[in-house]
Image (tube, rainbow, N blue to C red):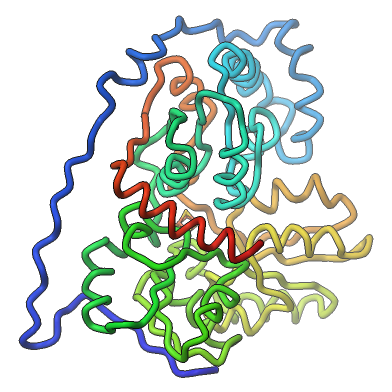
Length: 373
Ligand code: SF4
């Protein structure tokens, strides 16, 4: 592993922090509710018609949702799927959304970048983000002409909240000439300040693309450690971490291996180094899913990530028995079927990104996309 430095936003003696730039966020002249109108609330009774219309969807989630709970979800599922047609809307659902969202109302599923890239290609007028706020911002940055809604604006992320645009400017001054790479789990304002973005699946490739011996890779200290372990480039990082993945421990995983030496342990690179060391494979959510699909029938897999992902992958890899030492992401769990329905009825909460910030953030994301291709 190469040398790694964890930077902070404490200014060294004699270095004053610059005053944060104040940016007025230009709101659209009219709200989304004014532009599209508010629709009346549909009936949410579980009728024979609702049962029939949603029966094929229940089959996809029957392995994780007991039959007794389906009458609560089904009316929302039907109402949301009807409303999507009325609104010409699509729902993008991250792999960490609950199964009734992921399998029953989503049009597109995937990791944060897969979602934003697919959002660009849709003809829909409205995007409803089943995910957290930085993901909705990324969709807006890549599809500025579309109306992007997030069903709960408080759905944040400990990684995105760990760093501000001013922190990035401070790092630029402190490490002049050193390229800055931001994980996609950052705000649009942070993306606007960096040279390029990365995902957990391409972070090593992005860092090495500069051909220099030092790169700043922020804000996830554990992803940065994983990059440093897989590259000769010296990494300067930030003190951010994912509050979900950092709770796993290597000791916990060793106990699973001791109980059954044949288990395959798969971890996300946002996990601490002792967890990665105890795993057979580390990769992005998309790569984890791919790995699981290739596990032979009867194999047992310990999926070290957010709880809903194991539930969602289980139906795609029925040959595998999942052991789920999972942790819930409280931010992702703010997104529910009732809130998605409200978003489509009342056209809230609209995600707005300043046009100049969006243009600079888009440049950083597109550099990564073109690098990949
Ligand atoms: S799982 Fe971690 S990185 Fe993902 S949204 Fe939740 S806090 Fe953020």
